[in-house]
Structures are given as structure tokens and as C-alpha cells.
Amino acid sequence: MRRIPLHSRILPAFVVMLLCVSVGLSSCSKKEGPPLAAVIVFLAGDVKVGTASTSPRNAELGERISEGDVITTGEKSHATIQIGDRGVTRVERNSRVEIKKLFAAGDGEVFLHRGEVAAKIARLQRSESFMVKSPTAIAAVRGTEFIASYKNGSGKVAVRQGKVAVTAMDEGKETPAGETMVEEGRTAVVKVDEAAPAEKVTVELRPITELETMKIERAAAITIIPDIEKVRVEDLVIASAPAVEKEKALEVKIEVEEKKVEAVEKAERMEQLIQKQSATMEEIKEAFDRIDEISLYNGKVLRGAIIERGKQYSILTTNGTVQVPEAQVRSVRVIR
Image (tube, rainbow, N blue to C red; front, side):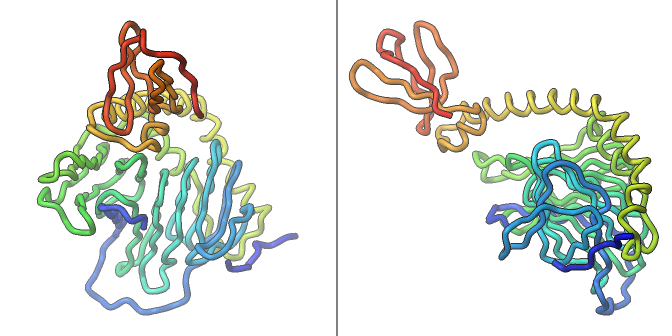
């Protein structure tokens, strides 16, 4: 019978996010001890594990995760990590998460470089805290089931149970907006507007969406296994049965809702770039999934994204939107 393998193994942005799940913090000092066992209890698709100094390799079910390890997931891929008996964190698709602390000094901490994580924290000692950091805001979480994401320069914290205190940050400093309390069933959206230097980081509250709720429910269905460091891989497969059933029940609904959300976010991103006075070629390609190359009869070549065709071509370039009469356009080709 194979046992769990025991081999061990910021983004320079102007905002920093600290998601701190805390239950009954006390003023007593935190004693240094051995880190808790962190184990991959479920995975699917393309999941890699590595460190800042080593190449990523394929993750394995039952693998022991150490401080400093980086988990990366691809399209249609995810991984769930259990940290001792404190809880589980599900790393969603297209995400990159770094394990920072494993409660050796009373704190658990992961850094979300990109993507999304959903967490269920079952229990913490009075002097412990669990943190998820990403380039968005500071959120002190009072509850046990939540989801946090960082994509395209903005972040979200959705709460299914309890409360979350969200504080927007600007270059590592608290903004004048102060603290925003996110109640159960609500979502905080942290946005960055570079065109508004006086208040470029804002926090907006809205009701939690059906998609966010389903993703949290999916993570909440994961069983927290006692004595995780001693559990066999075969036992992990058995214990994952409830989560697998929940995954199957929600899979189609989540996929449909994700496509709707992605379409809306894509349209918003396009509109933001169009309104800006300038944009990088990388930003244009990310928003429009292409770069158009327009050759004119006068020999000039424009690169960007065509946003309108007709008698007049509107082309979003790195210097803003350019208007070109159709009669001047010699040819157009798409650069992927």
C-alpha cells in the first residue's frame, strides 16, 4: 500500500492584497513549531509544482507540499491542498499560488499571483491566522468559506459565511477609502483606475453571484481528513467522493456562468482600452485576442485592433484610436 510521499519540496504592482482568515485571535505570543503537513488531496488536469529556483514538475496526488512551493494550474485544471486539520484551499484553473507559511509560527499564508482560490477553513487555534495574499487589497476574513481572485488588475472577495473586512491598498499603503466590511452573501470588487490618481483604488460592494456561490459550494464539499500526514493515496480517493459528486452536479452550470462572466469582462476590458489615450500592444492583444496589421496605400503600416469597419476604419493602436478612410486601406492581416 503506497503512502503519501514525504519528499519536500510580488508581483511589482502598486497594490497588495492580504486575505486574513482569523478565528478568535488572542494577544498571546506565537510559539515557533514544525510546519503543518500540507498535502495535495485532489487534482485534475495540468497541475505543476515547483519553486522560485526549480523547474515545475507534474504534481501527484498525496504529494507533500512545502513552504516555498508554487502550484500552477492550466486550463480545465485544479488542485486542492489540505493544511493539517485547519482547512482546504482549492486552486482553480489558470492560477499560480505560492505557499508561504504552514503555521510553523501560528500563521498560514499563500500568495495568489494570478487566478482564483476557494477556501474552507474548518478550525484555527486562538492565536492563529490564515492569509491569502494577492495584488489587490487587504481583507480580514471573519468567516470560513470564501473565494478570492486576482485577474486583469482587479480583485474580488466573495463570502458565503461570516464577514470579511476589505481594505484597499496602493503601493503597499492603506488608501483613504479605509475598511469595507463584506457581509455574508456579498462580494467586494477591488478596482484600479490609473486615470484617477486621487482615488485610483476603490472597493465596490455587490451581492454574491450564482457563479461565486457555486464555486464556494464546490470547495465546501471537500472533506477535511484527520491526520492527513498519515493518510494513504487510496484513502484520498475514497475521501474525495463527495467533492467529485458536487463537481459533477455543478460542472455544466459553472461552465455556462463562467462563459457569461468572461464575455462581460472581455467587453469591459475592450471598452476601457478604447477610452484610454494609450495602451501597450500586449494589452490590446490580451483584450482582443489578436493584433491587426493594416497596410495603407501610402506605404504606412498600422498595428493594433480594428474596432470598426466601413467607410471609415477605427483602429485601436498604442497611441489611441486612429481613424482611416476605407479608400486608403490596401490590405489587412491578423497577427496572432
